[in-house]
Every structure is written in C-alpha cells, then in structure tokens.
Image (tube, rainbow, N blue to C red; front, side, top):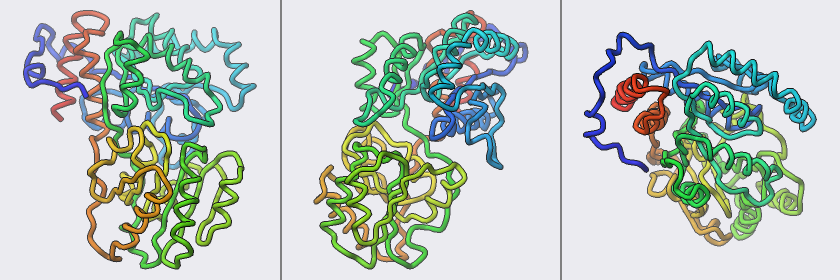
Length: 400
C-alpha cells in the first residue's frame, strides 16, 4: 500500500482560502443491478459523507436492487441501464442519448473527481463524459483476471480499457495489485487498499443458539469456490450431529452440487439471494466458509467480518492478506483434508467461549480518503486552485 508520509500531510498549499471554495464533490458510480457492486458503491459514498468533509454524489442503476429496500441509499445520479443481454445491446445503440444526459447532469453537479466502485459493461460511457468535463477518476479493481467458469470474460477486457484512462487504480489486495502492475506496465498510479467490512446487521454471537455448528458457504456457486473441496472435507468428517452446512447461492447445476446434497447435514439452495435476505442469512451462521481454489479477495469475507461471524478460508490468492492473523479466522491449505481439519478445529471450540471477532480492517471513510488523497497528490485536479483545495480537503479526510 502507498504510505502517506507525515510531511505530505503538513505540506498543503495555502493560496486558496477554504471559505471561498465549495465542499469537495466526489462522484461514486457503479451501474450493476444486483450483488456486491452497488452495495460497495453505496457504503463508500456513505463513508465519505460520514467524514463531514466531502459531498459524495452516488450514481447507481435505476434498477439496482439496493434501491428497493427500506434503507435505500440516496442516489443523486440514477441511470437507466438494462435488465438483460438484449437490454444491454439496446442501451449501447442509444449510447449517444445517455452520453448527452450524463454530460448535462454532471456539468450541473460539478464533481471534482470520480471513483468507479466496480467495473461494468457501460462504464466506458461514463469515462468518456468525465474526459469531456476533465474530471479524473479512480478505478477500484476487485478482480484483475477472470475466474474459471466466468461467463462475462469480455468484461475483463472492458475493465482493462477503463484502467488505461484512470488517474489511479485501487487494488483490494496485493495479489490483485501484482496482476494490475503487469497489465498496466507501471504506467498508472496503483495503490492497495484493504476491503472494508460491509455493514451487515449482526445477530447473536457465534454458537449463541446452543445447537450444532452452523457453516455457511455463500455466493456464486462456481468451480473456483472449491465446492468439490467442501464435499471432500465433509466426506472425511462423516455424519456429525454437531454440524449443519448450508450452501447458498446461484450457479450451474452439476455433479458436485448433487454430491453435496447427498451428504448428511448439508442443504444446497441454488438461487439468487436478495439484499433483504443477507442479514438473516449471516445471522443464521456461526462460520462463513471460503473454500476457494482461486481468489483475489472476498466480498463475502467482508460481509462476514461486518456480521461478526467466524471464518474458515483456504490459503489462496489474496485471502491470506485479507484474513491472515485475524482472531476468529482459520486458514488452511486448499485441499479436502486440510479443510476438514480446519472445521474440526472450530468444532472443538467450546460453546459459549468468548472468542474475539475477526479483526476489522480499515473503515470506508479511511478507504475513500486514501483514494482522494492519492488523486490530489497526483495533481489530477482541473487546475492549480482545485488541486490545492483537494489536498486540503483530503488531508482532513485522512485525519478524521
């Protein structure tokens, strides 16, 4: 991670009085309809708002699931995106209309800089408008390479194009940063910032229910999630009255899911999980399982941390960075025998023991402030006055 030196915080230009410049406006955008992307953007915007030193402008898909709930975030720039592949093609055909509307809206809002919270198919349109308005943007990269089974591999090509025009690239792990550095050839400013915990409502502490250990594997049911490792581990453990496992998420039906369904104490729910279900799903669990064979970092781990759950994870990709050394997290090798042993270790923890929760990484305010400071330090503002002001404001964000 780029270290911010104390002298950098003290060396702030003074030629522009803050009273004469409006508050820093940061556009945060993510145009996915479902999943972690819109939530990531909303929590980042909220983190910047909580500092009291920035005015975040949130842009989400008008169809985003997160906007339909009782605690919907304040979205200043809703965008009508698409609901299917045919809808995406139609939206691309009408791109000039969207470009014009975006240009008018952003010109009126006058953001100082922008942050793409997670790349999507239409983001190059936003990048074009930002370039016209001379507004620099940072790109948060969750995955640098496609995982086995990813259907939208073209998305990673689009992300690379988006990265080429970004002022700053933000990797959520050193594992991702290494891949990005190789792709960008050192031409872009690259920082590593740890994924903050998602705000998931907490239930009781793990094992407070007094029953069997409840293990949850949640997310996309793809090969790289290590479903075969889980099946092997549970076969090694055998039938146990003190263990209940739920596999919940959406993915293609295959022999591995059928094998899991046939194991004692295991239920498989191959379905999309709505935003409104997340809190109750994590509250049900004692342990969140990440049996990955490949991983950059994990949004599910960030949700588990936010929910105060224990975690069992394989030692692959960026997971050791995200979870290594944290109390309440057990890491193991990516094979069935090691995963079984990790589950035995957690099963041996006495019920009611006061185990510390997983350590909480940096806050959303610190995460956003790190990005803002880096962009200000780069001198990417539209003029010298604005660059000076960005440094003043971002310094205060970091000191909050």
